[in-house]
Length: 233
Ligand SMILES: C[S@@+](CC[C@H](N)C(=O)[O-])C[C@H]1O[C@@H](n2cnc3c(N)ncnc32)[C@H](O)[C@@H]1O
Image (tube, rainbow, N blue to C red; front, side):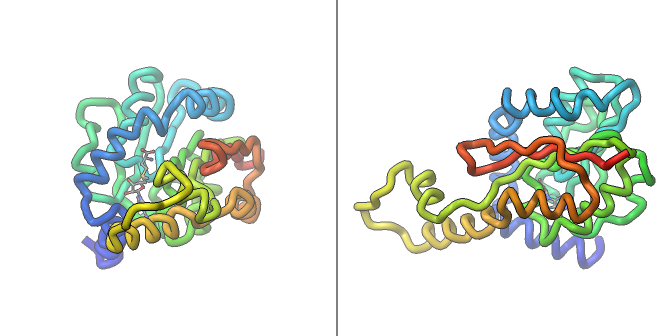
């Protein structure tokens, strides 16, 4: 394994709270919530019209690959590929039992030949961008990999005031009991790692790399956003 992939894996396990198995379990448990009716409607409106027999769909930062599993059951004529780097996510992946494959790569700096020029119909990055050191290199490569008219769906947490983050975490806006300093340090780290971009920052990055915005919707009471963008024809 290269030094840079090992460094990424060290970073990811820290970001995932030091316990990879727990992070993988939480991703499996959160799958239905993170691919809920609202997600499915957005996918149906902006990604599905792009798909026909043999179309290639890529899930970037696919975790254990449950979205690809679901898609392989409902749309068996697609070519489905995931990209992932964390070993504990890859261990949980069920690619042998379903019709999709996973490529291991660092999406901070993916090799240009991870996909061929204009070979993708749809790409999804569901809660990936906040885990990247920067998303611009990936966006430039995606612009090259997508077909003209190909669609990129980006879903991620967006910046929110510390007060509303804490109120949401604690379920109340007043703290009257003593708090553990270690748990609070973890909570603040969580805040800073999940509050990287405003919606407008993501839109600016997409525009800067040549994408056209098709739709931009706040979700989860404004704590996250789902964006559909297109490589222009
Ligand atoms: C929050 S999880 C979301 C997983 C999945 N997309 C979902 O919605 O359930 C983000 C995923 O991106 C992966 N990831 C983060 N940075 C990455 C990178 N630089 N290269 C490849 N995968 C990465 C993580 O390991 C993790 O599985």
